[in-house]
Length: 206
Image (cartoon, rainbow, N blue to C red; front, top):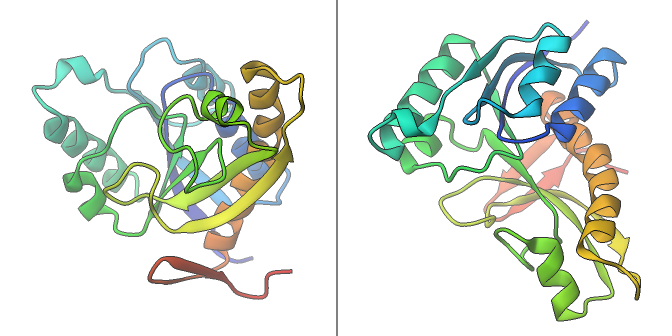
């Protein structure tokens, strides 16, 4: 059996994408092992999910640190001690500093509820509706020093309906997030991702 990819998942909220990753690992479709789940919020339901599945977890309240760099240094310490190879952001509502990015170059991924480069940042679903787009979706991408600006790994498109609200569109996009995020991590785990500047090539992709 091939070696499993050691991943660390950073969370702030409900953790539905974390759950999707856990489910794919448990059904053997994702060759990875979660070595750390870290939340900056003690009330994040994602931590409850981690506990239910017996995963190692930590809570780092950012208010307990003097600055972002100090917080990121502690994140780095936990992840490196846990032998994490790929950092997975799953609803992590903190901007990471260059200190963190330099510790895991091209080894941090995120999922965004829009078709980047359209509608980066927060409230992406509302921005899409307000703009009047006919299609939206989600994007898995590598993290760089910009806001949702790193190289794109995989995207999925969903239609925008005339009667959509922010909540209904978000729910439809979230279903696709749960499908493509584990898939992108699987591509990484299998060594099929090749980054060439801004372009990500998936080897043997259908």
